[in-house]
Length: 125
Image (cartoon, rainbow, N blue to C red; front, side, top):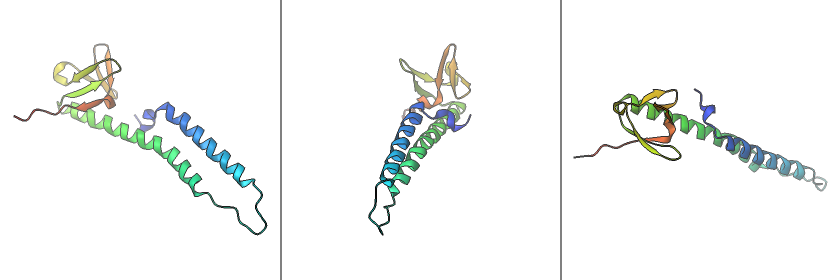
């Protein structure tokens, strides 16, 4: 699995809209008539916005992939994980019959993605 699988499709749409608005703004600003001898202003914020809009989804997917790898590592080392789906929460461990499947955990007909989990801390006696 690569990290691009974890980019939220909403990021694509939002990123496209922001890039489109930024480029449209830059185009309209560059078409304004400048007085003779005056150089048009360079817009560094446009570069920043485009870099941020392209970079943010990639960073978010990298964090998601890192969380998945970390949770799979915990599971393989017999730790318990608390995982949530839209409607339920589960305590997942090998001892309770869960198994690793692709980038998540499966038991009977229930599949939970590993990024929807967090390690259960054990009690200190």
